[in-house]
Length: 475
Ligand SMILES: *Cc1c(COP(=O)(O)O)cnc(C)c1O
Picture 1 (tube, rainbow, N blue to C red):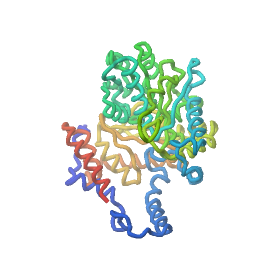
Picture 2: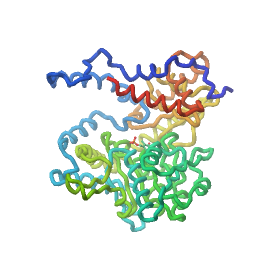
Picture 3: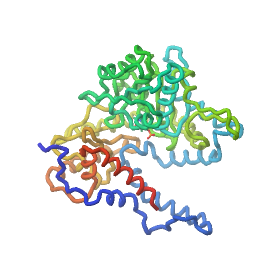
Picture 4: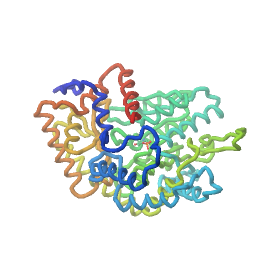
């Protein structure tokens, strides 16, 4: 057995060069615009360039070879969303007097999502919410609401959030942005939140406890019932992060899959996030945050009464927003309907069963837990990041995880089509055999992932990530 952190692959000469190469496929192919063109270019010419770029990029996701990322992607559905957006492309919900349709779309998106997530079984409590720009914003807004309530109502100077270490990075971003204390609780050996350790981490400054349904890394559902009961007993809020699972688990439950309780039917769940732009099959740029009771939602809002620009209020972080995205989201929800979500979920669960069975057949790798629609695997025998690279050579774009080193595929409707899960399993078998039997190839991301996962000095990794973003914004 080799230590999976002991990477046999050659260290990259310049990790940034590898990343830079991946970001710059168009160098020299199209005109570079690092200044505005002196004369505007013809629309047709620009549209042709846009089409060429999309043409290059689309086969990978269209053929169902990318983990997560595109959750629906059928050409007819994509064209329908684009048309809905186009019809309302000038709408800005900041000006409801001009675009009252935006309020209709957004209030109904929230109501439909709440109804799906147990609003009728919420013990008579009203479930309210807002539309946001994505899962990160939904989570950040909820955390801000808990912080502001704790400060204003309870006089807690530095409110704390208690989160399992597998919770999404958006909770770190919220803690960092809002000056909250974040207590990260190690998960159990099964990669799910540890209830006893969570209980021990709650103190007088805690304003919210968090659980994922399911978590991004391993697709496993935390013990939400126990965690939310614990929060309720201690008189603090509980947020279920349903960004990934919010539009899958309700339907999986109806289909008879083993889905533990996770939504507002649990009395301790006081807020949830659910991403319409993932398994809601809307276009990128919308999500929903929900609260038990209108009082908590009021702490999310921003208002100012003294600005010379007039009295001003926004429900979320942005000022002006794309009302067209809400129109397209609403159009997705009402055209798909319960029958559409049930059918999509049935196909996704079936595809995942094929993938899980295939992973279990490969002795060198191990499926983590028993997930419903995300399949993560690790390995004691091989460098799992080299398996990811070998899958990359076979056209697959998978997600590298760390702590522990692992790789996952999030199964979407792109994968739930005949032959795709079987192809994944066959390619994975071949990729594992290649890594087992052949010497490491130069290049690839494995050394970078290995380094990022194992280097003890995290400031080196932090620097690297900042340089990566500098590279992103260099024309
Ligand atoms: C995707 C995801 C988020 C964040 O969502 P974005 O839309 O990428 O901002 C949060 N939590 C989980 C579990 C997710 O999968």
